[in-house]
Amino acid sequence: MIKSFVVENDRLRQADDLLANSDRVVWADLLNPTKEEGVAIETLLGVAIPTREEMEEIEISSRLYVEDGAYFMTATLPAQTEIDDPLMSPVTFVLAGSRLITVRYHEPRAFKTFPQRAEKVATGCTTGDSVLIGLLEAIVNRLADILERAGRDVEAISRDIFEARSTKVSKRNRDFQELLKSIGRKEDIASSVRDSLISLQRLAGFLTHAATQTKMGKDKRARIKTLSRDVLSLADHTTFLSQKISFLLDATLGMISIEQNAIIKIFSVAAVIFLPPTLVASVYGMNFDVIPELKWEFGYPFAVFLMIASAILPFWYFRRRGWL
Image (cartoon, rainbow, N blue to C red; front, top):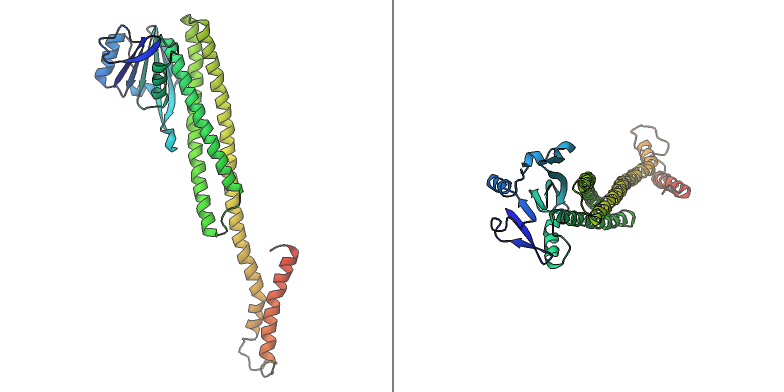
């Protein structure tokens, strides 16, 4: 599918017919393009569209390059972040003269919100480079929103870990399982955003060079510089968030270990408490002919008293030492 945008009254407007408005198009957005659509764009705009396999190359030389006067820039962007199941896929930005071409195979939120805003408000997106800068700013803002939401979720997870929960062991075990799953999902989000920011950081550096070569205006170069600083600051925040998630993972595993140690402690204390009574019962349960207390009138009460006393004394000692 191809979406083409033209400029009317300093605002972007989606054109109904690409062929009829080929001379006025400033932005052509290709979503899951077919081979025929790729050929049509190459014919109309004179730009070779990279294939999906070429977009997924990890080498910088395959993601950032100049060809026939057009600047090709590929970044990895997340989608479907609302359901904590991010879909990562590359998006290629092609700056060819006064036109911008984007090629993608998924739908990041910024590709919906930016055209809607540019259609309602005069954002100054009248050329391909200004549209590119505005679109990148929308992408960075979206990544910041994702990190902000992930940060709030991490704070909630932190409270769940360190605040008192149910006294039932089975309920606590379910809580720990859910916490581990939540921590894993947040780590996926943080890792996806980190990968995206790294690719955007490289793209911003390449775009700075392109701005110098194409002699962009001073205000546009300033916006690109601000964009680079925003990406760098978000990358630092992502690192902090990842470290906090790792800490919460360690804390959760530590809490699970404490729970397990407490259970083992209960069994150990119970074994120690019932060991002396078992010993007394074993002594008087032996089948020998000569046992001094066998015919004694108070033999049975005496044995019961010994068993009770031998159970109470260890319990009292453990309580006094603070082991219980």
